[in-house]
Image 1 (cartoon, helix red, strand yellow):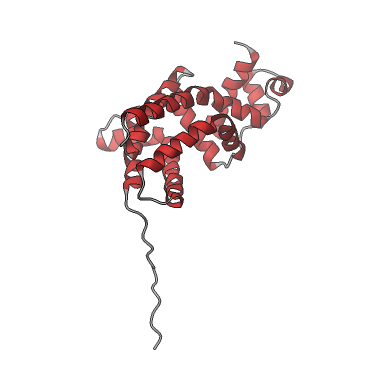
Image 2: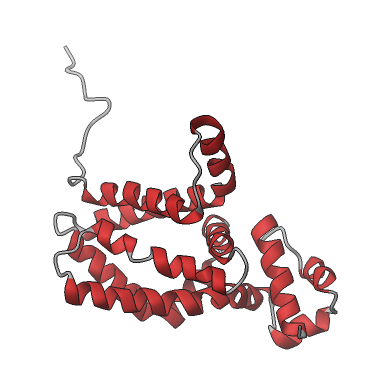
Length: 219
């Protein structure tokens, strides 16, 4: 294995276990058994290393998602939100071909990037895969014409939060399901459960403003 891949593999393992903020370059070089100069040579900085780790997966995931968005819009113009989210399942499962347990690892990495506020990751995705994201968002808006864009923004934010929590806790959740309900569940089934829940949120009617503490008449 060459030095660059040794660094990527070590970084991926530590990032997924400890998070980005709690993983130092020194711990990565120790795990990879390389010197710090080799990290600087191949990646330049920790941020660029994080992006490279994620891009091993994004480079497989995003083109497949894009292809399926085009097929969905061509053959199923009246698709709903669940149809749209469902098209992501197979591309996500394909990530096991990138690395062993690649699907779970990628989602854990993405989750950590989300809740550790790694803003450079969002910028990187917008630069390299912005066209795919625009097509996905356009397809999503088409499935929920009853919602204004600001409402779609909030529901997408809540959906991401649900996905992040579920996938970051996937091992614990599948263990609980097996122990409490005798339900054996693989990663594909877990993803589909999340999709069903998220899609229901997008299909719900528009939000209604409700005052929790209505003003009282003053005598």
